[in-house]
Amino acid sequence: MIKKLWPYTQGYRKWIALGVLCSASEAVFELLLPLVMADIVDTGIPAGDTAYILQRGLLMVAMALLSMALGISAAFLSARAGQGFGANLRQAQYDHIQDFSFRNIERFSTASLVTRLTNDCNNMQMSLMMAMRLMVRAPVMLIAALVLAVSISLQLSRVFLVAMPLLLVLIMLVITKVSPLFSVFQERTDGVNLVVQENLSAIRVVKSFVREDHEEEKFKKRNDALKEIAERAFGFVVINMPLMMLVTYGTIIAVMWYGAPLVQSHALTVALLSTFFTYITQILMSLMMVSMIMMMITRSIACAKRIIEVLDEEPDIADSASDPRLTVADGSIDLDHVSFKYDPASAKWNLQDIDLHIKSGMTVGILGATGSAKSTLVQLIPRLYEANEGTVRVGGRPVQDYTMEHLRDACAMVLQKNTLFSGTIRENLLWGKEDATDAEIEAACDAACASEFIHRLPYGYDTDLGQGGVNVSGGQKQRLCIARAILKKPKVLILDDSTSAVDTATDAKIRAAFRSQLPDTTKIIIAQRIVSVMDADLIVVMDDGQIVDRGTHQELMETSEIYRDVYQSQQEGASIDA
Image (cartoon, rainbow, N blue to C red):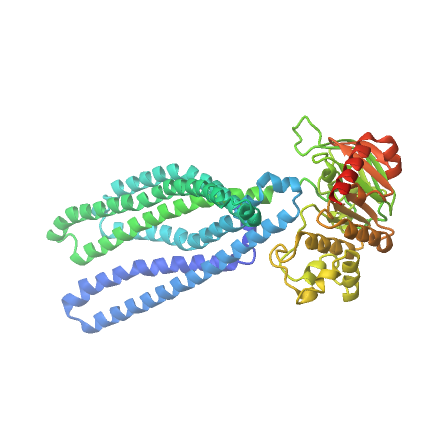
């Protein structure tokens, strides 16, 4: 685990080394102070030598100041190294997640990935900071104090033969109990994050259905489950300290019991006995620090495993066999006997034996009932999912021949769930083309029928949309997403039911703009309304993951019972509405 995480300390290793050196030096100076004090008590005070006392006192002041400076330096260096390590871990995870396919993301869940990027990384950076301080300080103080205590009195040091094994047994018992609880703790943190994320992203739905009480109850269950495991896990951590203190003070009492006769027999001076007490405290405190470190490491291991799971996850779709020089020549699309299923272990195919050939520049409509795998079909084209069987070709080449950057750059998708980002309308549109001019932006918005409402907004294209485009309606959001796709001037344009929130007249204007502004672009339109695709060059009818009919509107009216029934029902519905 350390081997896997060590590369992410790159750029901060010198700070780690310096921090460790400062922590060790600080501990050494703290251990030497009691010896100087004992020297003053045993030599300077009995002799009444003021100069000697002042000299030793100044030495103690200098040592204390140096120890303080080293401590401050160690704290600064550990903070810098810890924050840098945490930032590197977050960046590495985030960069790796960008390479994930949809299937990879679904394997973890969005909420769990958020927790791993935030909570788990924060824990790891705190662990490094604490390790640089305690994991150096505790062993140095433990070993050095033990050596110095033995040098003062070997007889009294035998007390440690009972105290230290007892402390170690207590530490191991607590760690054995708490270790599995921290893994469950992180998983339940995922659960709380999931509820919060779902609630905030769907807050309008929650309020429109008056389901606040239901959501509060759902959150309470997850929150109580997290609290319960936290109480159990940290309860063991809390009980660790009283047990340590019990052994510590028991040891001090034992040293007093056996040390008093040694002082009376002049085998040991009062000053050295006091120094011995100081070292006892430091030894036992060091063991308590070790127990804290072990607790911290136990939780860190749980977090580290989750982070490494993300970093070790192999993207289902990769560029390993791709030619980085190859670009998409045109918008032709061929699906040769393609089959696909989301779960490789499932017996049922989501798409089965799809054989479809689309020439560049064609307009293709796809119709079908909900669950007929229309969206699944088009997501194979830009390789958002990988076909299990058969071959998907774009521009005459298998999609695996292209890098995902070149393939997806040649495709533009407007999905069912329209996504806009925080920022202005202009900033969102520039996702389609970063260097687009104002004239190009205006033309794309005209084509998507978005200009009409943009010019009514107080700041026009510089109007802030808020998070997720909350300041515009569903239909306006769809038109902005279409404008963004048009601005890209792609080889393939895929509209996944993306005009469902606009009226039929606006829908017709947008399709007319496609024909005039994107004549060479292959346009694939998934729709529920036949009127949205009836002028397409080819209409594909899907049912249960298969293509059941294909042809022009006129051909399907003559040959496809499904298509004819849908058309007639929609026409009847339109006449009733009229």
